[in-house]
Length: 170
Image (cartoon, rainbow, N blue to C red; front, top):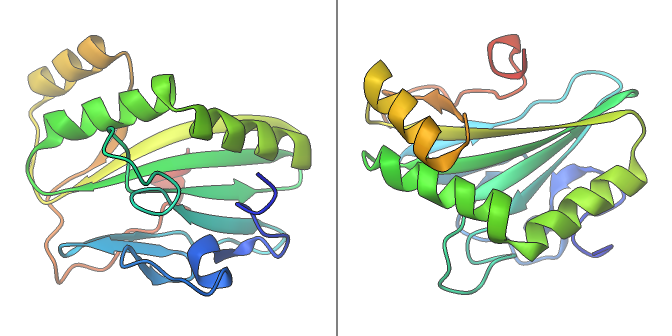
């Protein structure tokens, strides 16, 4: 697991290994089919991007596109990201599968816990150009027992949302 998360902590793991994948659009940015998301750490924070789809997870099982690790002096975040067209229900299924069934994800959590101080917060995000009504959102949350943040209605020309914004991390 040590090779998955580099010590510098402000990099994309794929790029640091010299093999950037197509999902990584910058050191802390993911992009797929016009949907993109980034994480810009503040002073005294460290961040890492891990491309999951076809980088860490190379099988055909369900998976999210990527995750960010954000470390603050007394708190760390593991932020799962799924970049999705309009099939938002499938994104819920993918996130739930990673959270509940992926041993690699549990290893990443263990690694973060053992290498940071303070509490660990897990959050998930769906970045989509589709929209989802409140009733459908509640139903999916009940079915999959997860509550991802939905960043909906993103168009390809939109500015990439920064997950570090207070509206996302709270």
